[in-house]
Length: 190
Ligand code: SF4
Ligand code: SF4
Image 1 (spheres, rainbow, N blue to C red):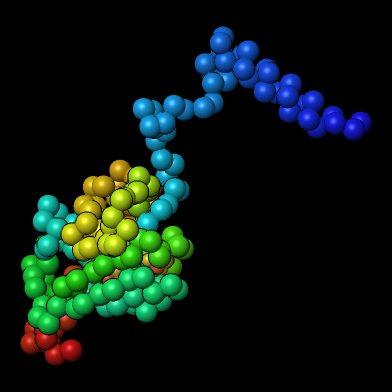
Image 2 (image 1 turned 180 degrees about the vertical axis):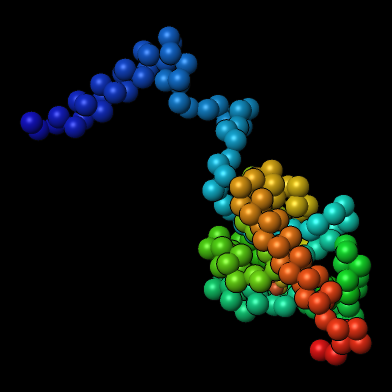
């Protein structure tokens, strides 16, 4: 019948409008910004850098390999590598980025930087309230702004963060086992 779809839609709207006075679940709109729905685990917006421990400077997982910078399709990542290695949160000497900027006004949230990072150092954030009145640089996120603790990663993507922790712990255990199994005097021969 011509117009049956419109009648069906209007009937559904009327059902929810009247029903919402008696069944709270039918009230499906949220009065944002006074009320916010919690982000879904698979939500993603822009990338952030993960650090372990309490100190963002020492705990940053990023070793400035620049793979993400090369692979980012719109080229919105800018990295300057430190010239000397510094101890990470475990005391191991690592390179770190001296600068790590992402131009969020160019980023298209494709997640390729996350996929190519071999160190699980960059992940997708769910933060979306980023509007700014500063059109020159307001959306240029610096290393300090991008760095967030692993506890935050667990908060926004609990399942994924747990898997990453397990994977990193297993990789560390394999490395330790290999180091222990080397004959004495072999250490540092690589
Ligand atoms: S975020 Fe990952 S891929 Fe990008 S520079 Fe750091 S370690 Fe390399
Ligand atoms: S999400 Fe995509 S566009 Fe954004 S920084 Fe990563 S690779 Fe670049």
